Length: 193
Image (tube, rainbow, N blue to C red; front, side, top):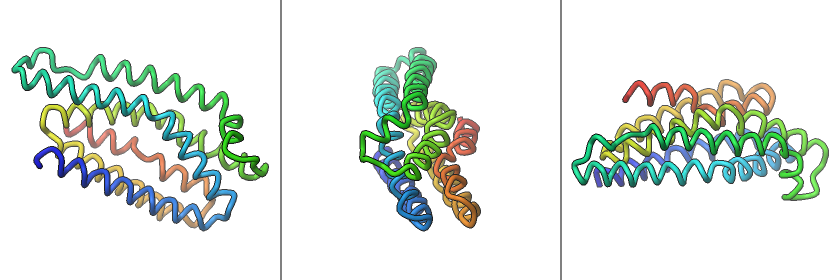
């Protein structure tokens, strides 16, 4: 329960923030709603290697702590690998964004434009910050400090919601910025280390 409960609650809070951001985006019409849905799926696919590496960091940190080998407990290799692979995924998404969007549906020009805007904002430098943040969170969970990841997740969700609400009166692209808010949360999480 010490590790599992904070992790489960963190996932509920983060996904609730995504649900609320989606509700805000739906108010901008069908093209924006469709573009953000497709963009989120592409962004999620691009993030899968990041999560896999994070899970490996969790397992390796936990194994080394369990074996009492604290000299081997490090995030450096996992962090470097995660950043490199995430950068590769971001560059691929940025280079082939329109083609990836067209895989989902024969889209309207407006939806393609909105989808590319979503990917330019949400699958960019933000993804590298997220990869670093996720690696640190995975390390914290592996060493038995899931509360650090939980607190960082709360910072991220609160930041998304606050920026989404404050930016909502303007254009959808500004709400996309709210959905890609982990930069401040990463700084907050790093400070906790």
